[in-house]
Length: 369
Image (cartoon, rainbow, N blue to C red; front, top):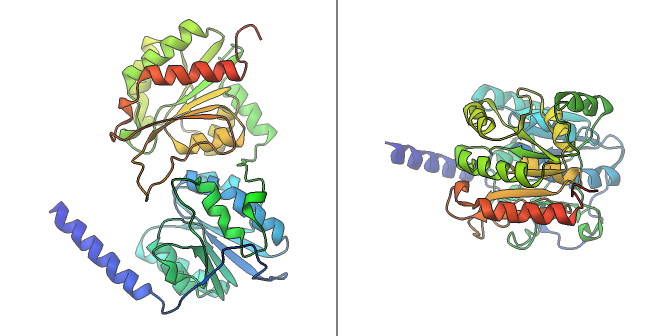
């Protein structure tokens, strides 16, 4: 039954893509050139309706685009999955839409976007998105720009898709600045996340039980259970930190789904729980107070990069042409540990300890300093 449903889904998606397909050959832009000239009153819509990590790696491009066009109306479409991280793009955009699944919600959104009469829609996805193609078709902008991929026909203009196994996702997205006369390789593509004094003070209060000189933040899991490193692994690792780095407090970050796991961990070693149920901004603020971050979640990886915090990322990785490089911290200190087994639990504690020792030494986080 499950196989039949999958076949039906694929058939339906194929029919939709066939309907959305446009009989045109987009213009390929491979070098910096001033292809578009927008004035005050012009409107540009960015599509980034996926996960939190995706919107964070798009910030360098969005920042560059705002610098090129300081007076145009720049809007963005986020999703229910990443609206929590809207603070990352608020300094650069005028309006934020939220893509909600459901026939009625989608129809309302398409009507609203069509009435807005956008001069350009820029698709920030580097993988084909049927939803992006649908939005572009029904919003009917004067121009549409995207990365060269399977749904290239949706765009009036495209930029090259850089080799996914050689170029970080930040660099692949930044290619979209080429039609605006800028060479992305010459630009600062550092990630950022705005942080207020109020958020920092609240974070300090939440972590007030941590009295040691340094903090290592551990994000227990990613988007699903396969991205959980394992309770025994965490306990063994934290015991090593307790015994070898007593000047470090260990802080656990987790969601309600991992409450039982966190209780078992804290019962077997010395660590502190970060409060749960807080906003993403508050979560980011607490992470920003850590000196080292261990995480299987890419959103935490990008927060670490935004604040230049040494990060050890645990990744499920196939190394295929389609998936490309892991989303490790960009332009920031990091260690990348990966497994192709489909389960993070297979990354050894010894490897994580080795990388942690190197980070402590390299960044002078020793007890005597």
